[in-house]
View 1 (cartoon, rainbow, N blue to C red):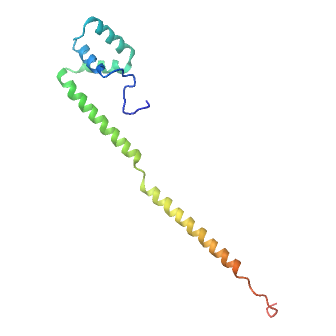
View 2 (view 1 turned 180 degrees about the vertical axis):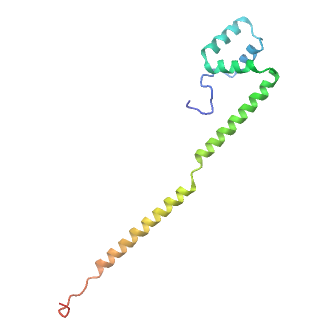
View 3 (view 1 turned 60 degrees about the horizontal axis):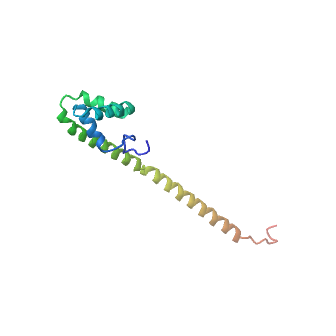
Length: 128
């Protein structure tokens, strides 16, 4: 799936939910019923939805259940996105300390090298 918020990539229209609800409630005429059955047969998502909706005894509870499921899915998606964005602060601290140590070592070697280059000992005959 390319869009994690779209759980049904085959969704054709917003009326599809109403159509399935009418199909479950046996409120469709023969032509619409056949078209809906064909759409359900061609889509595994719609097939699962239809099967699940048929298992619900109280059809008046379906909108509340749908809202509850949608709310739970949004909550889980937000949590997952938050977890993706949260980068462990310990990694940054270790990285910063390592870079600072590298910088300090580099600067100290540069300073020591310069001091060695500027200090040229005088060779005198007394020490030879």
